[in-house]
Image 1 (tube, helix red, strand yellow):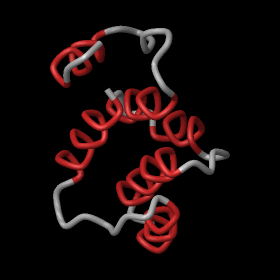
Image 2 (cartoon, helix red, strand yellow):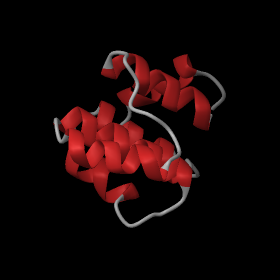
Image 3 (cartoon, helix red, strand yellow):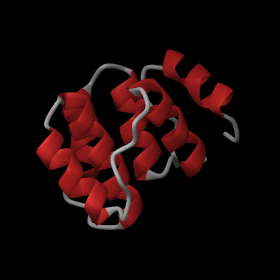
Length: 95
């Protein structure tokens, strides 16, 4: 899988494709409406890439304080864009 379009097409499947990086797996579950499962993928990880996804998930949840904590761990600032746009940026970053 190399493009955002291909990733979005995979959302028609029942399960994410095997071999996806954990960050993409989290974003896949998020797009399928399973926030708890998306969060569980990155909740215990401490690398910057996972922290960025974790931050996005808490921003989506509306927990801005927690989101800002994770954006800081990712060495990023909370974006001033829509959640949809950030999701797409994340997917593209990890493809």
